[in-house]
Length: 307
Image (cartoon, rainbow, N blue to C red; front, side):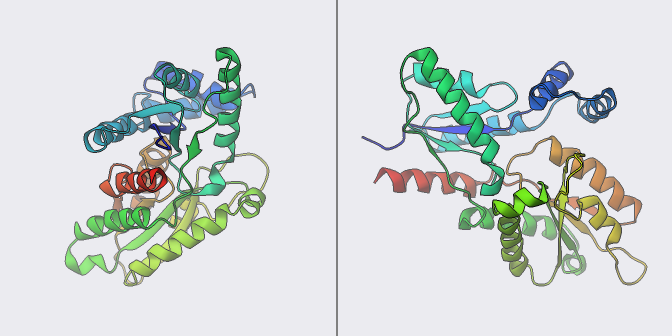
């Protein structure tokens, strides 16, 4: 018997219309009150994109590429906070006889996955009770992949390709700004998240010795506890450059393999706007999720575990 019978992309999810945005936000809040001010702010962010997060669409593109290249392993998609909901996707998989998925959470850093795993256990137990049998007890999670050679090669490739879009004399002058989702400082140090991020940035920095490399943390909560700093926006404000001209600035969403709202708003709108107001030419490096290296990374794991 093969160890895996399917691949499940288990992602955060995102709304796909303005009508979806408020229910999506309230689902994330899980009963906690969202102030009218904060709700209005976030609705305004989504309105810039007609309420559509690019995450679900990007994952569907990945699924089409997967089906073309790995047709023997069917792929499914379930979300924590949006449609298709994880529970309904698992129900569909159970109905189709798929019980041993490799579960891929699209975050390279293990320290970011705790809440995903808690939600998984809750949903699996609920579904098992409803179906009257223990389902998905043989599911396995793809391990954190920030040190995986395929992921790092994909990140190097998208950075290199973006640098090559610049005139030759500007390629070595460019500043590489890696942006990663922030977490509460105490949690990030306790679960190893901060160390994982720093190690990945250090590895990639060594591959671009000619460039200045900086790390910023994005999307921190307004909760009154310390979060990882400095923020990406603060980093941009503090970049100094010799002379009167500003070097090109590459915005690199290292922690997000698939496009999502925290990339297109936090980086493409806020960070780009801040950098351009200071005179920096800005290029945003693509996420890596649709690159062949990511599919190879998953295929190799499937093949190794099936031997």
